[in-house]
Image: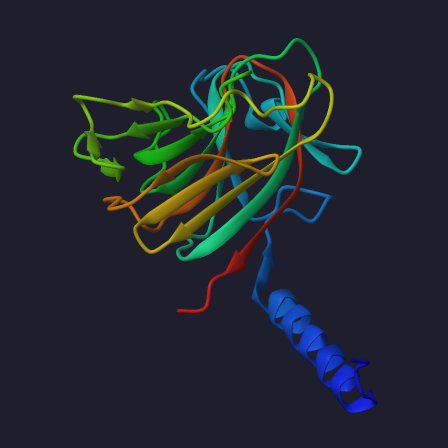
Length: 217
């Protein structure tokens, strides 16, 4: 049965409302021009964070050496984080930290890491004594267990190509999706809010299109 003009009008209005709500809830984390809203931390006191974390061609470039992290000034909870990354040289190690509880200038912060190490994107690493979460029937807690393997084989694209990572943080639930594949899903996280950070740990890579969409609660 053909749709009436009234039905078509309702459908168009519904789409407009959904898109408008998405735009209203979206918070950009990177403006493509500078690192305002971020703080660079490097563990090598001789190095300068501006050398490790740069804006190049509208993307965030992370050199990988020395070790450290680029962390947001603001804290967030109940959101879907979207970002894209690619290796610009030999693929190595990096990660995305969520629910960071503090800034530590000599060690990784207490947080939950979505691993970006080559062929391990989607693996979870929990940091900080007492930090725990549950996956299926298993509970993982620091220091007894820190790494939680991926659900599927690597879903990364070839080195040099862009990858998409979506991390949904819904109260104490966390879901990691890499290029459309659910690679981890956890519940009962002891961390459910905090800052977001990008890791420098041995591999040079770029990030782009970083934003969060606030979940309505």
